[in-house]
Length: 148
Image (cartoon, one colour):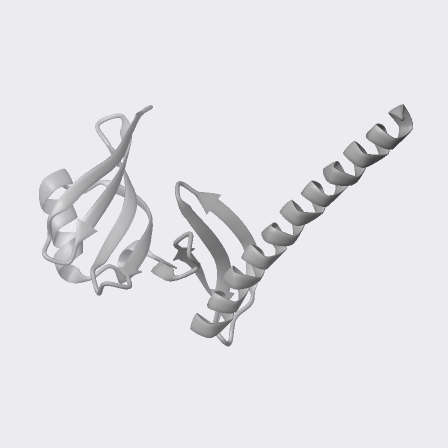
């Protein structure tokens, strides 16, 4: 009797594990299909999770991108890594006006699927590193501030 109960419990544990793995594989397939639909000429280098998003990191025409997907596998936003020199003039002028001549570290253009575009960069200012979001209209939002 004990053997029967143990065998029965092991069978349910195996079925539960198998079902969870099947669900995870199906979920991964949904994200891969969504990625392929949105970026047919690219392949994912790395999948990542950030906050409530699944992020696909990839290169397209030698440019680095991050594609942010919601839990339902719909595309939420695309971030294109760029240089500070490629920032729009209005964005660069807004940063210069608020922070003066500072040391900018990298830049990223983020385009959300709702049409909103903003830029993210890091800037060394007054012994701290600020991660800032700058909108096309010049508004600046500090996302993170780290003291040196």
